Every structure is written in C-alpha cells, then in structure tokens.
Length: 132
Image 1 (tube, rainbow, N blue to C red):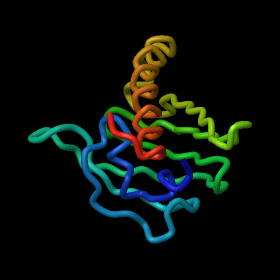
Image 2: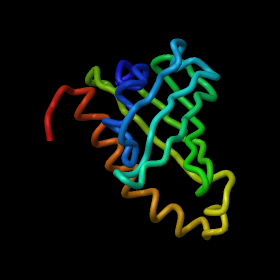
Image 3: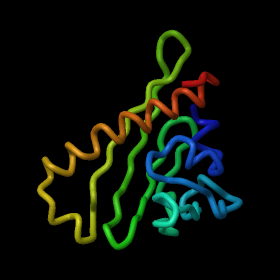
Image 4: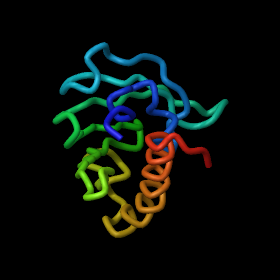
C-alpha cells in the first residue's frame, strides 16, 4: 500500500476527482513536497495542488488537499499491518478552510464518506494489482 502512496504519479488513479498529474516534487511524499494535479473533467478542469504535511513511511501520511475556490482539506491516512501480512488503511478528511466550510459538518461528512470509500477501494485495487 505504501508504495502506491509514495508514488505521486499514482495520485489521480486512486483519488476520486483528481484527473491528471502535472508535476510531482522529487522528494514526494516528504513533508513539504507537492503534487501538482488537476481536478474535474474537460472543459472544467481546475489546476490545483496537494501538499504533504507529515510523512512516516509505512505508517502515516497527512496531506493538505486543496480545490480552490471550494476550500482546503487535511487528509489523514493511517496504515496498520494486519495479522495476515496485509495492510489496513484508515482515511479521515474534513474541510479546514474555504467557503465550503459553511456547509454543516454532518452534511460535509455525508458527502465525503462515499467519495473516501471509493478512494480507498481504488487504492486497494492498485496496491493489490487487481482490476475493477
């Protein structure tokens, strides 16, 4: 699982909404490294970026995803080894700033839930080298 997270070029393959990579910092996923990507679908593409805030290889990755003018959201990914030699990943995300922060937290979480479940499903498929 970590190999996928640590390769910034995979980002649009597993993150729902990200559609293409434009550039990846050479030191990705170290804290401060950036992913330059686009979100949306042509002709409504928005060029944006995601920053790594904290990185503990094989254990934790904290990102600051932004989609301006909507807002910015810290994304917390925690990896835990399983007894069968696999990996469990837990993902948390909520808006920290921007106009979409005015949407009540329960509504935001109801919108993030299905998106994050699909994001984790895609991440697992890539990590397990399976196809949908």
